[in-house]
Length: 317
Ligand SMILES: NC(=O)c1ccc[n+]([C@@H]2O[C@H](COP(=O)([O-])OP(=O)(O)OC[C@H]3O[C@@H](n4cnc5c(N)ncnc54)[C@H](OP(=O)(O)O)[C@@H]3O)[C@@H](O)[C@H]2O)c1
Image (cartoon, rainbow, N blue to C red; front, side, top):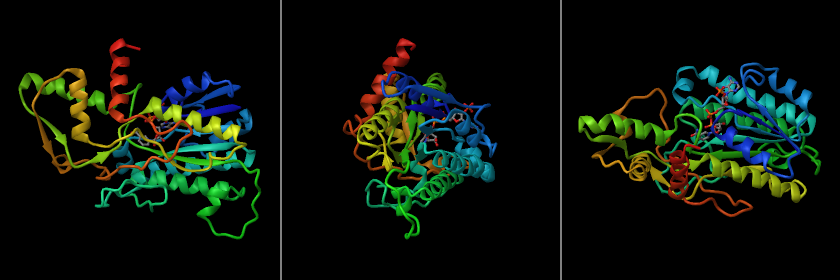
């Protein structure tokens, strides 16, 4: 397979490139990022697909600055919504499969029954980033529906003719990614701890926002496995909505305490509500996803993944 990865220099894109490069089923990996792939340019996706003709695109590129999205919602819609639709149309038109990476922020997080969100639950974003990513999901489904993709068609008006050999669309929702490169939540906590320690002040940690910390390396491996196994099964098993996160759940405060413990930093902490700080974007309070089945079984629990990430940082690799 010839596989293209958009957002190739991002957190997920970087690990996907490495992992795909080690796979026998991959003939060529195409790394797409700015300036060659530009979410602001409506012709960018079509141009790349027609020039390189990949069999599969893993679309990780996005404007992930949630506060920026809240301040400029139309730009968020352009980058995360319209551009995803254009990539989907270009893929569907050329017979390429598409994995569109989406987010737990398509859900409002208002449920009070402590049940994780399943793919069948109704999205209802409460911030412009979530709205723009849901718009991307919808645009991708609509583009693949036009080809007869069964999963995309399931949410669309019935009555169209379906072809069993159509390319697949997979929507992979994930949450709270950590890993290199870039400044992720664990690194922000370590920087904040270094500042708070000399002053002797307690570190304030948000206790009323819950999610699934997920190691980008584990997510990348799961996506690669999904593609590989569905290839063996003649394309079956890829299409649909997948929720891929590490096992378990945590509040921001619990996640931060585990970061501090692994780093051997002993400082006082104080649980506070997220309303302590005002931010342009409001995250869902309950952003927990129910993991969907994976060919290699469920991902390990997040503390084990975080511990491995710390070993990697300590080795400087
Ligand atoms: N991070 C999370 O916690 C999280 C949680 C749930 C879902 N997701 C989803 O997972 C996917 C990957 O996230 P990530 O953490 O790997 O994101 P990331 O590190 O922010 O990487 C995003 C990538 O998109 C590229 N990009 C940004 N603006 C672009 C533009 N205008 N044109 C073309 N490329 C552009 C970036 O390029 P530059 O670096 O050159 O700007 C970067 O390569 C995204 O779709 C995101 O919505 C992320």
